[in-house]
Amino acid sequence: MKVVVLLGAPGSGKGTVAALLVRREPSVCHVSSGDLLRAAVKRSDTPAARAAAEAMRRGELVADAVVGALVVERLRTCAPDGILLLDGYPRNEQQAAALERELARENSRVSAAVWLDVPEDVLLARLGGRRICSQCAAGYHVENMKPRVDGQCDACGGKLIQREDDQPERIANRLVVYREQTGALIGWYESRGLLVRVAGGEPSDAVADRVARTVVS
Ligand code: AMP
Image (cartoon, rainbow, N blue to C red; front, side):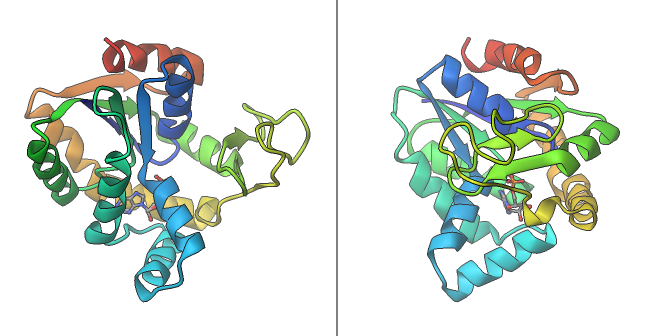
């Protein structure tokens, strides 16, 4: 299995680019830790799920063991000869090391870490206008990616909502967490010769073209 990690701040377009790549290349298995966590806290009401939901509301990181277990369970469902595209995981060095150990068990390793580098003003505009489907989690934007029918998901007809952590004060906190914890992964992958920087401030189709060169090649 070819494993590619998508790195980038909240709002850098990791989920959007991954969804475009899946549409173009069906062998891509898109694993989003944020989507896995949102689904997990919706379906279970355990103390761990409640703690995860609270961390997500505050824009902080969920415990490594909780998110790691969800990601490992999900990646085992991806076809072994396909391309695994990790979106939102790892988010700190401990998770990157845990991923390395998990992949080594399958005689696999990360082949590239694609960093979507986006200026902060673009991140803020994207996050503030982002809407997601309450049913299937498809992503939209009030300016750049409007649904065909106002407030309604094109794919499943679900109601579009603003994520609680996309409120302005939560966005600020998530960007701080990104800079302090996830930002370090750029150097981590660079020192291993795996980092590919992609300017991510342009329209998502153009960015997806550039990412596809690394992911599918
Ligand atoms: P995302 O959809 O990737 O923006 O993630 C939404 C929220 O889920 C983040 O703000 C974190 O609270 C949590 N989360 C997602 N991925 C991780 C991860 N790898 N480690 C810890 N928390 C995560």
